Length: 156
Image 1 (tube, rainbow, N blue to C red):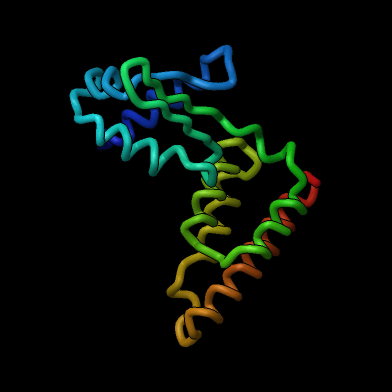
Image 2 (tube, one colour; image 1 turned 45 degrees about the horizontal axis):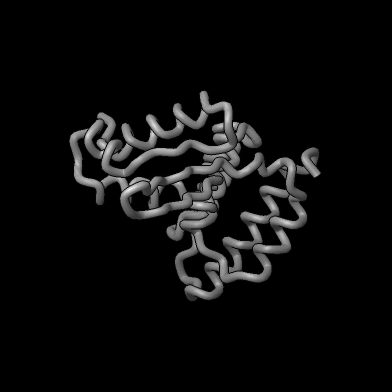
């Protein structure tokens, strides 16, 4: 059974899909009223389901004429995969970010469901028992990057 959060997310994604613009503009209060919830629930959905790692940018303006704009970031295929992998070298590896990124490129149809599930399996900590936290993240990062490079080779 889908949660309220799932319903709000699906609604916003449908709005983006049918939008003729590169964004969707909503009012927090109106959306909360539509789903019979408090505005903070809308904030939660925006913060947890519409992050840059998931392929979205949220712009918010508070006040009387306030609005929320949700932009869909352009398909990651248009960016160089080597650029994305280079960025991974600059920041500490985070499996949560990696899962969000996988979900995004799956939604963009850059990966199949099976490929996504296979790469997600590499991110499970239980496969790295006996390794220190730092060693585990280093190995996860290397395997994540190598598997994506192999799958996406034709994309770059």
